[in-house]
Amino acid sequence: MPKAEDILRIASGEVGTTEYPPNSNNVEYNTAFYGHAVRDGSPKSTDKYPWCCAFVWWVFSQFSPCLIKKTASCMTLGQWFKDNGKWSSTPQPGDVVFFKFDTNNRWTNHVGIVKSVRGNEIETIEGNTSVNSNDNGGAVMIRKRSSNIVGYGRPAYDTASKPVLRPPKKYKFGMDVSSYQGVIDFDKVKNDGIQFAILRSTCKDQSADPYFERNLSECLRLKIPVSVYKYSRALTIDQARAEAQGVIKTLKGRKMLVWYDLEDKTQTPLGKMGIQIIANTFMTELFNAGIACGIYCNMTWYNNLMSDYLKNNVAFWIARYKKDDIGTFDESHKPTGIKNLYGWQYTSKGSLSGITGNVDLDINLM
Image 1 (cartoon, helix red, strand yellow):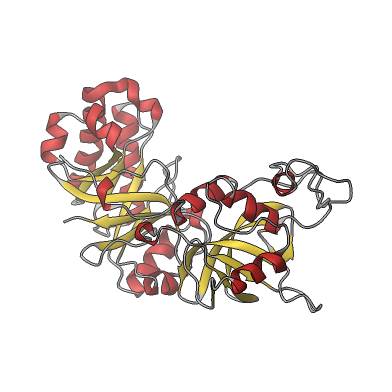
Image 2: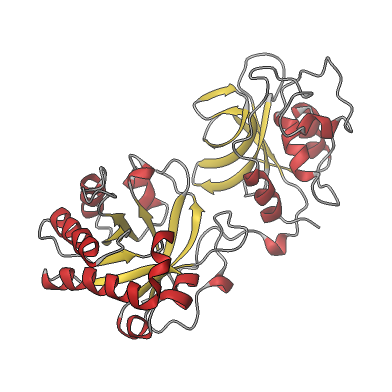
């Protein structure tokens, strides 16, 4: 029996698939052949219906038993959910969501899959949509919706395995962000449960992240505890020193914990001792400026490139995700065997109200 997280994993893997030719709505040419699947591989030249429902059915058809009716019609699928007592007015991850965007007599004309729920807003994965418009488009995209929703069809998942989207309350819940997240609505982020933030300090050229000052001022305004990180590309002592000075310049005398992000593949040939020299150089510069520092890395780097000296004397923030990372929380993947484990980044595909697109999510373990 497929689980909601299985459906979301398959649907997420299709994000970015585009219709070809553009604007054709022709299932015969659809890149992923969603329409072909509904028609048992026998497309007709007249099969030019919008393929949002065909995409949804194709996702569910990857598992046996298939939990929804085989159809390319939004109305037929929606009515099937209603007739079988599987209709709801409130969303859950994995639900099939039905929309109405026009004024004709059809009670629904678009459909997608609920990825996550944030208050009155849902994040969806939809076929035949566009990222910038409510109109149907020509791609599989992640959307955020709060209106034009008719209702939700609820497949008969294994409810004992429902995805967990937030860590338990025993943990402090946080995020790490940079200019890649653009303009963040921090009021919504805080209301969504965020209790701390880790901000990118500087870019590759050691200049301040374009959104650093704004992100920092918003955290201070809302009393969200904050630290910063520096993604390292240093291969020499001088380069590590320059990275540290860039962070010091950006902080402008403000004291906050700095995480030295060691994960760049160009650094792996340095080996344990080379990485130790780079890390010590960076941290010494910061310590001399009165700034505390720790190390961010993934489990592979921790096990193979962190020296015993660093493991015994430095705080670590570790990234470790599930193999099929879809933004969910799984406590069984929490890093173990780490002496000074400060925090755990558990996904790079999280979602939050107030942020467009994916965001790294973390918990504080101290």
